[in-house]
Image (cartoon, rainbow, N blue to C red; front, side):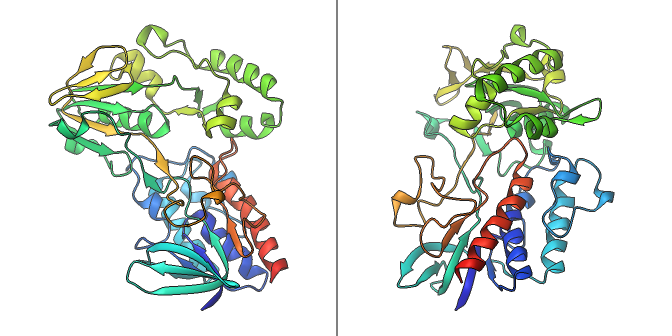
Length: 372
């Protein structure tokens, strides 16, 4: 038995465990994967943080300068490993939680091996990018091509010489499309349901993250107008190539769908050069083709579904009132959702997920310490 248990050894889970320890509270951190930062370990090879190193470190131990301004995936994993070691955190890997139930003044955590652990305080930090989601497209089960979710895509090598369709134009989808184009795919199309907000990762050395931090407090209409103006100045009009500007304001999309803008790390160049061709959203499948929303069809050899994730939390808890329609906790980031139950790492901001995890870890640690 433990007094405090943390689910998830990603950035948020490690940060809150470290903050608890600094306040004299020990915790046990349960992680389903083989090591800390499991979700980062599994992402595509070329991935770098879209936030700068100096604003992405966790409390008490920053990311080393030698990792550069835009930290690589593998360097971030090394940093998280070093973070857990620095604070001597009790991380138990290979531990998959299948169910969480309240029991008296404790929380019971059921494990996939049939075991059970209990704790007076449970902190859930498994993240909103937990469970890959593929839409229930009609006819998908009859299609004879291959489909890979972006969660398991690593690099372009298996798709060299193939005709590819990437479904989804978020940051992962756009970067994977560029990776495929550079990596020898015969052709690359990217299917777009809602036009993205595209921003340059940095302009004259000024990172887009800083714009989000400095301007994020503006009223929604003002921010939307300013963001649209900046996009017109920074990013060329790609509507002639099939990629129009978003008709919905950036802050409106952030509020209504937890949307973050698409940072350009090659997609603008590749669309202009014809290496990546935008097409309409995926509508349905036949045995040999993919039907698109504009009535056209394509015949790719393979699809990468960059179609997002679910939190997976509603499958863990019996209490549906804890979560909204998307599975995100209604109360998170500081206050307790139920006595002894906290969630962190589920807020999407323009300041970056790692910076937000650092902020929330301090709030939750204070709340837990005060409640013990």
